[in-house]
Length: 138
Image 1 (cartoon, rainbow, N blue to C red):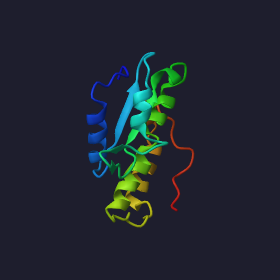
Image 2 (cartoon, rainbow, N blue to C red):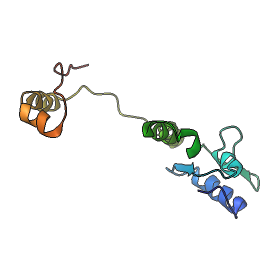
Image 3 (cartoon, rainbow, N blue to C red):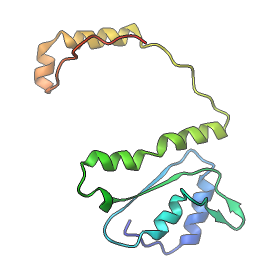
């Protein structure tokens, strides 16, 4: 976005409505514009409220691109995606959905990884180093 929102009330209303859905909104501000409205929508400090209705959970992540301009692109990616895991967990919790218990890595998966380690042409063709040690089970 360039920072301009012409319908802020409607945008807030729609974000509040979306806060009960399995939805995440990521906004990346590009340029030198005033992004104060984006900071409001991000709602990290103050939850959004419109016509007495408050957002159920945080679903918006705002990141100004200029803060990451001189950094490796992975820093921007990490920041834009930083809140999504918590947003997913908060939605699932609000719906009473619990995660499955953790499982051990399947022996088939481990067999496939081991077979790629033993095929030097795979590593040279795709430019990846072979694993230094076979994977271990937890």
